[in-house]
Structure formats: structure tokens, C-alpha cells
Length: 229
Image (cartoon, rainbow, N blue to C red):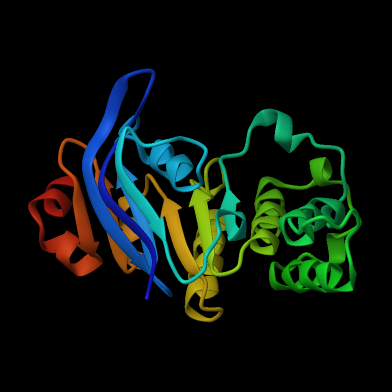
């Protein structure tokens, strides 16, 4: 069943077109990796899916009763965010705000939800520590737990391994893969790492001088995939 359908999208900002003729579908359980050169429109596309930007033309349709406030999102982290003075528990709990509706306080279910993903990310031993005291890899796990608290079935990740060392990067890729395969979470991830995209994702959307969308096997056999690798 299609969770997300994009048809004939033209995207840009300040009257500048970044990418056009963009069509693809994401079904429940898919792991889609968005790749392409810097400035090709990957982050613009993700923000448009989230409703933070409007497409110049074309359409984005969400299905299966999925609301925009039910999509988890892990953006690229800024230097200011890395120094945020809050505990791991507080940051992960803040991901439940979209579940609260008009309620001013978190309830028992919200706290159980946060506890679940703190454990899922292996953060039980540091849940009371200050976020800014953590390593880069630990911080990304905290932010991923927060995004998981906000989502129902769809998780959007923008360069989730940026700035991490190779061993931590591999651990993060494996964790995201497990969330897709074991937990059934639909993943859309932006990555600059073509080889990791081919290794872990099942569908590839390449944005650049040419646009490609298909399975990773189709991508590897295409002129676009062969040329890039």
C-alpha cells in the first residue's frame, strides 16, 4: 500500500528550480535512499514531503491515513543543537508532543513510548545524562529515538551519519536497517554514500542531471548507477 506518492514534482526556492519531473512511490515497509550531488535538491525534497516547503508544481499524496504530524524526522544536526542543555530523557520525550494533541502534559502511554525507544536505541544507562556531554554517535541515537517517538510508520532521515567515525557510522546504518526489517518501519533516508545506499536500501532515488527511481538492482544495472559508482 502506498504511504507516499509524488507525481511530476518541480521543486525550488526563490524562483530557482532545483529539480523537476520527479515521480516516485513509497510503499509500507520500503527502505528508500535518496542520493545525488550536493545542491541537487535532496533536502528540499524531504522538507517538501514534510510540508515545510511547497512544490512549484506537481503533487504529494500521503495514504493509509498517514498525517504529516505522524511522520518522524531526523534532520541534519547543527552545532547549536549539539550543545543543547537537556537530558536524554527530556529530549526523547519531546518527540511525543505530536501525540499529545491538546493535552498539556505527557501521559503514561507517552512515557512508555519514550521508554521503549530509549531501550531500542541502547540508551538505558545514559537516559539521565545531559545531551551535550554525549559522543556524536550517542547524540544521534538520542535524536533517532526522539524521531521514532514522533512517527507512526514513516521515518525520514537526512544524512544521519554525518560527522560520525567509520565504526559508529556502520553501527548506525545497521540500526536503521534493523528498524526497517525487524520493526517494519518505512524509511526514507538521504545519503551521500552510494555504496551504503546500495547495501542497505531496497529502492534508490537518484537526483541530479538525470533522475532515477527504482529498486537497487535496477539502479546498479542503469547507466546512472553504473556511472556514479
